[in-house]
Structures are given as structure tokens and as C-alpha cells.
Image 1: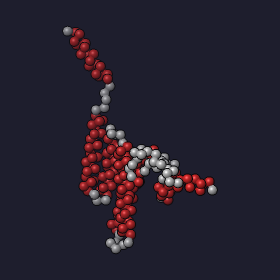
Image 2 (image 1 turned 30 degrees about the vertical axis):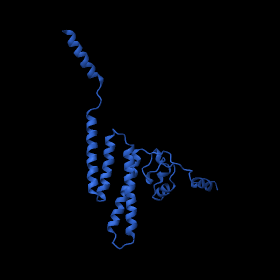
Image 3 (image 1 turned 180 degrees about the vertical axis):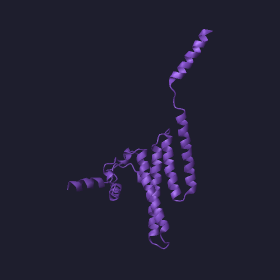
Image 4 (image 1 turned 90 degrees about the horizontal axis):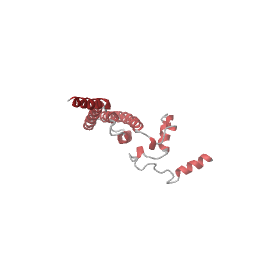
Length: 187
């Protein structure tokens, strides 16, 4: 009886409000505190970790990237299934729509992961672009795959450059200043 009362509270319109209005990556990455449908689907997929997983408004870029990768795998699998179905098969339309929804889910989660990534974390940006490239290649979108591959290369170049120019210790600068003053004082 108590369980039914709690469930009825969840079904009251407006009870679950978005926790963060800026969390607008789409319906697959909503900022709701509790996603009953998503939780039930994850449990049915034998992912019991969803029961202890934090709500999406607490997710970081790594969690969105992992979710995007899971969606991308489903997208790839359904594309393979779609290609193997005969033309007149009634499941063609359903398989195509479901595959596209998983592709959209992957893209939205990758976008959200990129949004949550620090501007100077070029390695994480490159990792996200690499995941996007893999998705685009697997579904035959070569133009988009090339664009994300170039973006990944740029992010990796920025990461390498930022590693080269790490802030130096002030010791060499102070040593140079004192050395210059010493030379000037000897004249």
C-alpha cells in the first residue's frame, strides 16, 4: 500500500521537476531526478548498477560518454540488422526507427559530454571526437566521420602543445634576474 502511494506521487504532474534547466541535451539526457522508464529499461537489460547510479543531473562528461558509447553500440547493431533484413520485411521500418533513436541518443550524449568537458581538457575532447568518428564510420556517414576525425586531430595537437608549455618554476626566472643584476653590479 505504501508503495502504491509513493508511485502515485511520482505520477502526479509536476511532482518531478527538472533539477537543472540548463540540462537540455534532449529527451535522452533529461535532468529529471528519477527516470522511471529509463531505469526499468536498464534493469530489463540486466544493468542492475542503474539502481545505485546517481541521477543524470549529477553526471559528468565520463558518464555521458559511456552512455553515448552504449547507445552507439545499439545503433551499430541495429544498422547491421537493418541491412540484413529483406526489403519486404515488416520489421524494416521499426528496426530503422529504433536504430535512428539509438544514433540520436549517442549523439546527444556525446554532445552533453563535450559540453561538460573543460575547455582546456583537450584529451577528453579528443576522446569524445574519436567516439563520434567511430559512430559515424559505422553507419556510413563518411563526411561527418572526416569532420570529427579532423576535430580529434586538432584536439590532440592542442593537448600535445599544452603539455610542452607547462608553467615553469619561477626559479629559472629569478636566477636569470639575479644573474643579470650581478653582472650589472660588477661594472
